[in-house]
Image 1 (cartoon, rainbow, N blue to C red):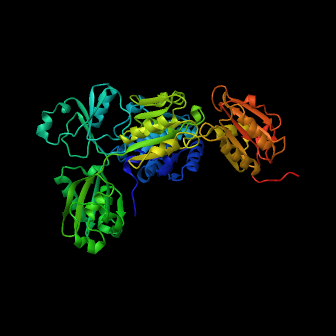
Image 2: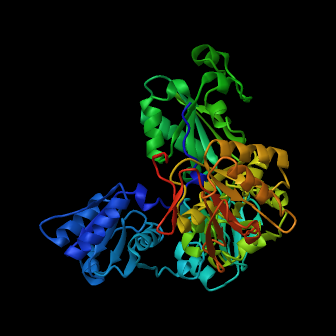
Image 3: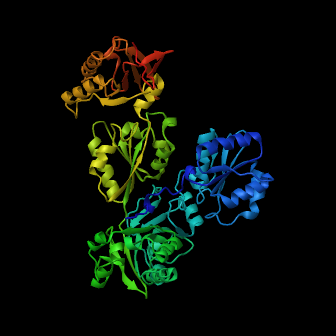
Length: 591
């Protein structure tokens, strides 16, 4: 079975690390900055030619994006004659000689220059300069959602910026970013008849339509094309690409469906190498998904054929492939001389991002975490964690905050919002998968939603960095909280870590009502390690009130520790070097 990546879950703009980036520089300083980017991005390269102007033109022709270490005016004069369409031109970011600013010059939304400027800024410690109006005020650009867009994009974007009343009319709930309050969302099928649309109240004023149907356009309407359609394809061996393409084009047109909403083509595994089908997928810019005949045979279809079963092992190829993931059949199988096509509409899939915010400091929050928070329409989390990120949320984001002890309720709420079709971010401190919200959420999530995990810097890693390098060799994470795990189980795990001579990171070490467990754990470690074994305590790592304390198994007072602390117990080989806790990478056993 071959399956495509899901277009609804792709980032609207690829990161620089996955793009072909041309770097152009005129001076030694510029080339030095360029080398830093090239070292970080595997597909970036310094473009050189007889002149800087020639190098810039070559980068424009050959690359997906360009970072120019030149004066803005020079870049404008050189590239002006080459400008074509912002949807296809490379993104261009200009960086000054001192690398103080990274200016998104061309291709802000559609080309990804805004995101590229942010990435350049992060690597060079430069300030990203983004002048696109929607980005400046925290609103999503209509051409940055990763979906094809048609109609009056500039005019409707201006209406959003100006706060004018505007309707978003969708034929289903799709995982869109948050929109400001003056955008009213309605779930209703859009009119497809121009005569009807003239008298439709929803056609008055500014509109965003989200639909796979062909609809009439005017100067006050934008249409977003969600990836909702799957075209099942069957064929004889050697079918011409023109025949498949023509048949699919006619089937979509007769049904009033937009080819811009094609999610993928689908067929049986036997057709995975069929050149005519693959060429059709390439022509429409969508992946080809193929399935074993036995799986397609299990799909209930309206028009099975025993002739087809005898030939390929399934009574249906086109209809079964179109319906393999469920949905509704919009175009029953229709045939030409050598090909068969059917089209189904898949229901929207909600999106749940499990976001680790890091230990607390904003500069230890990953860019991907910020991106997911700004992509979400609903953000769920502990109130004190949400307070850390309210400044990065888009206007109109719905925030579901709750207090301590409501982990299960938060997980259920986030999954329910995603199952309803929304774009949701469920946040936790550190990494969402380490003693945080990822595991309870995934216990409730089913295959109706797409899940994205966003790694975060854990409290243990933050504490380790402050202490030195205590995790230089094998280590284990242990929680001392017996609220959900019996102490007898925790005690066995502590004993195993102590006997195994593993460095131990102790989470939830001590609270007002759990004041003896840490002492018991330290006694277990002391039975297997020298009394001078280093023990580090870090409280509020990277947050206000940060405190770092270094002691030993013999001298640590458990009363010094609370729930805001992480305790790191060294192995028998951990030592203190120049006031830093260090575990050697290779054991050099002490005599």
